[in-house]
Length: 213
Image (cartoon, one colour):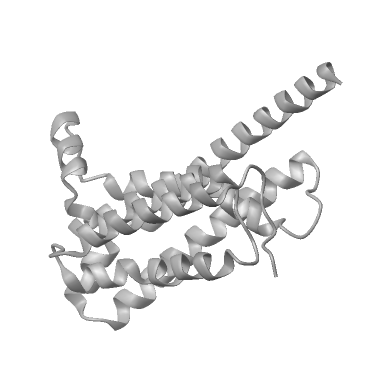
């Protein structure tokens, strides 16, 4: 059975994204800062990446979706290697800008919304005609918010049942009691920006097509 290709989907782009991610992941899987936390952080990767590979036979994302998902996964892989609260980039930002904490985890949550709305949208509407612009934006943002919520709930459940030290590193709250709420808010903010950008690009594409018709 052949896959249902998304817009502008080519095997070379998907393969290149997989090679880049595999190279980065393999390099950063060597001697992570805290192996137990690394394993917990990589559980979604262990599930999602093989699922995308196996599912490629039946469904292709667009080139843009593959690239954006790869960028997000690389950011997440960097966080899992160092533990999010100790990523050097976040430490540099903290010291340079005089921040109270390492905000690398905030950056990645925002990046999730910004980068993963497109893959979520393509997966959600792969077998049916896309709805109107408002409904499309709404369900894309809602999908990103749902996955962000599920991740935070998973963090809570894992942290409450595994080794306390690993759970604390996994949560990465850095003493902020509102960490989960802020993370989800940033993910939704990124998703809103991505959905608006997609809407603007779609309008411009429709207008351009109408002028050349």
